[in-house]
Amino acid sequence: MATKGPELSSSGTSSTMLPMLSRSRRPSAMIEERDVKLCKEIKYNLTPNRPRIRSRSVSQSSTDSYSSASYTGSSSEEDDISPREKAQKNSRGFSDFCVKNIEHNAFGRREIEIAEQEMPGLMALRRRAEADKPLQGAKIIGCTHITAQTAVLVETLAALGASIRWSACNIYSTQNEVAAALAESGFPIYAWKGETEEDFWWCIDKCINAEGWQPNMILDDGGDATHWLLKKYPAMFNMVKGIVEESVTGVHRLYQLSKSGKLTVPAMNVNDSVTKTKFDNLYSCRESILDALKRTTDVMFGGKQVLICGYGEVGKGCSQALKGLGAIVSVTEIDPICALQACMDGFRVVKLDEVVRNCDVLITCTGNKNVVTRSHLDRLKNGCIVCNMGHSNTEIDVASLRTPELTWEKVRSQVDHIIWPDGKRIILLAEGRLVNLSCSSVPSFVVSITATTQALALIELFNAPAGRYKQDVYLLPKKMDEYVASLHLPTFDAHLTELTDDQAKYLGLNKAGPFKPNYYRY
Image 1 (cartoon, rainbow, N blue to C red):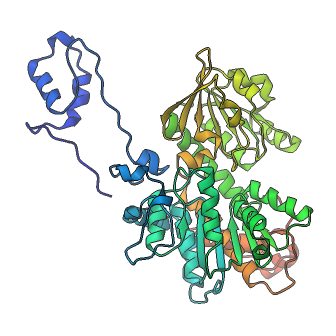
Image 2: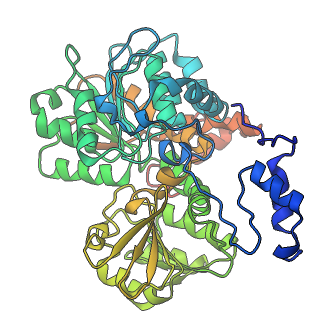
Image 3: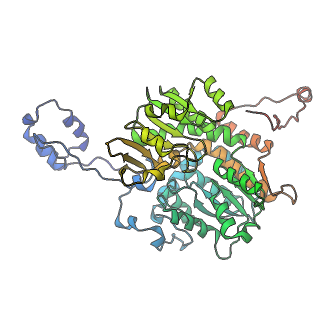
């Protein structure tokens, strides 16, 4: 992506000289006339004996995408128009989509190409299975974060024969230029960054209720597509062959449906597969939490008091990352096993009420609701950063902050000051929604592992003979987990040791796997 070089004044001087001027130790009265003239030429206010003020503009990247590397073209009045009010077509006249701006598709295509380089397992699956078309006839409703990595999954599923309609599972996590690139390629994409709640459900409905198109598979992240299809189109829901769900929240909802007898189709719990839990939840969050906090607040972690609510795989990753940069990390937990793991890893296990007044950073990652209440928020110290790493926006009681006595002050995209009457303020990120996908990005390589797992789960459910899967929630077969891992090993030039016949017999294993029983804890 081309970048704009420094502006030159009429004298040919670059604006990169400004830092040199601002660092000058000369008294303002001694600023030479030529310096003032130069600064006027490059539109920088440096009048002697007056404060230096530089106007601040908001680039399109601050509103269009969570990624600072995303498209940063100039904004226009048209960008303020709701995508639902625009009549857009791609270069071939296709109009079955609703995105922010179809004209930005070229930038999205370049981001997808970058992601492909870091998603070796998914690309390998595409190459190996493309000729067989294992998803021929599959009509998939997708409701996930729409990012460059998701686009690689969408195009892989299409290459394997599937017909696809896709919406976002989070109102803030869509990369607008990537959505435009998918629409340009002919995919029915209904999503843009900054949707309202009403827009969110409208987009899901547009994907489900399409003329002449009957979905038979669901790929969900959070359970919203499943919920909407069951609620609004129950007859259509009963015709679905299978559901693949990848989040704690969505899996919880599936088990509730199963327990109440409302789950009338088989579902695959990808979230608790080894390749999701131990890689995406742990390694991805370990990197992306730092990225999200740095991009939004420029905070230094050394010496900060950090409280992490929940010590599951996400909590473990966040805790490790922050501890590694010198933060003083404490953990809250309800599970004695996870609490003991936290203790053995060197973290204090505390109650939120005991330490809430001393937190510099508060992070939730429990998958629960009302973990941080208004009472806790009232007692936070001035300047505390509050954010959520769980899928849903229920962990922090943000609604309780929308009251007349509190002032909301927008700092930048996805960053708000919440100001109390006494002047205390906290920094809330992404309005309590998933901070890493709302405010930063996640590593493509780890997403490749999860996306490959999702693709295999879809293939398995779609092609399973009648009777193999009942109307219940299943884990991905262990053999598939191992296959996903094997597709990613060549990237590291890793070489597996092979069992001899005698060794395999001794362990009671097939030489080709699976190598661990289902109850094995990795």
